[in-house]
Image (cartoon, rainbow, N blue to C red; front, side, top):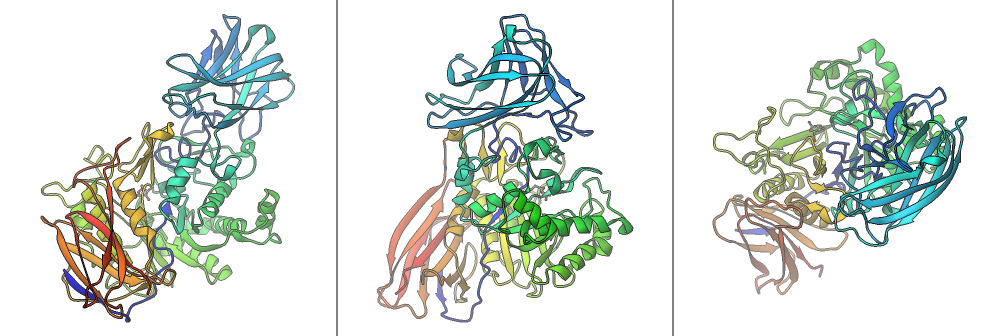
Amino acid sequence: VKFTVESSGGNATSPYQYGIMFEDINNSGDGGVYAELVQNRAFQGDRLFHKNLWFWHPIGGTDLHLANLSDPLSSALPTSMQVTGGLEDTIGFWNEGFWGFPVVSSWQYNGSFYIHGDFEGDINVALVSNTTGETYAEATVEASSSSSEWTQYRYLFTASEDAPDSNNTLRFTMPASAVSGPLNFNLLSLFPPTYNDRPNGLRIDLMEAMAGLNPSFFRFPGGNNLEGNEPPFWWDWKESLGSLENRPGFPGTWDYENTNGLGLLEYLLWAQDLGMELILDVWAGLWLNGTHVPEDELGPYVQDALDEIEFVMGSTDTRWGAYRAELGYPEPFPVRFVEVGNEDSLNNGTASYGRYRFASFYNAIHEKYPDMTIISSYYDVGPVTPPFDASGDFHEYAAPVQMSSQFGYFDNYTNDHPLFLGEYAVVTYDLPGFNMPSWEEGALRAMYPFWYGSCAEAIYLLSAERNADKIIGAAYAPIFMNMNRWQWIPDMIAYDANPAHLVLSTSYRMVELLSSVRITENLPTTGGRFGPAYWVAGRSDETGSHIVKAVVYNATANVPFDVTFNGINAGATGTLTYLTAPMNASSTVGDDVVQRQTTSITSDNEGRFSFQMPPYSVGIVEIDAE
Ligand code: AHR
């Protein structure tokens, strides 16, 4: 492959090229990035997911049951766990956690619970091995509670050593003699250390993994999970604010109740902590079962979206901005992008979205925030263009054969409507006769990203980079998967309760590399033919370096590159970094299959850089600023 990178004639690129899309799927919020360790801490549920005592077990022969007291903890958390009876001197209960509890010796854990009932004595709270019975951390809470009010207790403990695995439980025990009458418990919580030490915060290893992707934007909170399965349930931001006692939870669309502990403010802080631009997805009047709000009833929902934006970015002089300040955050969180709904082309949504729903939201948001980029949630490259001056969100889940053929997919896309690639992933291996994944229940899907699929995704990302004047950015989806309970595969990062089990997939490694070096001005290249090698070129205003990003796909031997940069002198130096892995390989717990090679390169007398890249590799050449 021989080509020249011109010194002019390109375009400025989007500053947001790589980012994160997040929704609570695969226990990626509760049981994932939201660091709470107790599962079913407040017995939340509703008509879709009934309240239950899952993950709680009795100790000492007590009975555990759900109770709705006449004076509940709060109207949002009306149901508690009632403990009665007991056969032994020590009674209590234990929680399974999100499939275990991590025990790390340097960690200080932060716990709390509410109790209602007549009790005078010590409650022992301990992290205990399920296999050996060893206690790793414990605290004694001196409790004196009554049946006329709810009393909250807090405790701290530090683990004495690392547990060999996360097969541990959280046990609450107390002398039976100290109990007189039924005891009720609610909001039983335990947090490990969190990222940036935020109370009610996020899991450190997952935040660090995301930081490693150098993400520039954050699309949240969905995805399907924004929409809700059926009326009246949707991701109602107002119910995710304030103290945990006031958050009722929400029947997520992915088969489990969301606690809403991960609420709107937690999302905003998450974006702030990782330096990401917000892409706020507002609910657009469509439930996943296809029900949509009629035109003459949409007004309050449009107002709701305006209120949400005001909560996020309004000054403290506004009603919702003042409420944000009251919750402790007077500084607004700037919003430049709002997306209206999610995949509104599905579930019979297209007609109402096109007829009145999108326009209603667009007009109201545009009138109040004329500079805001408003993204329409459905878009097909081709005949459909978003209305007004809106952007479009294009999603693609594909087989490698399709994604690897889309290097030129966006080349003829209009400049009038910036495009956002809000979700993409290769989800299946190439199968003879199939070039599209099947969405039938049980259809063959890859469990984890695999290397040639990740290389196909890299070609798709280069197709976005070479059009990065009109493409806002791209996000892999879904980003997270709890290996104990998931609804969607493959996912970019897999984990369980044990931080040592983090799996940074082949697609993670690929994005980590491509996102680490940003081209701020694309430059045209002349010569060379695309396939099996694909490339984009440009330079960085920040570092002054010239850059080539390249993918070698279905080659059978190493591909030699001869690259000349117009305006770069003989003897210039740089580095080539590329990733390789066995073509079909996936990373799994303890086995990162992706290898990274970095070599120095120098141009010859004619200013030419010569190097090779192997079949199925993704690389970056950076020429040092002169
Ligand atoms: O990423 C998984 C799902 O795929 C999202 O929730 C939805 O937007 C898309 O269909």
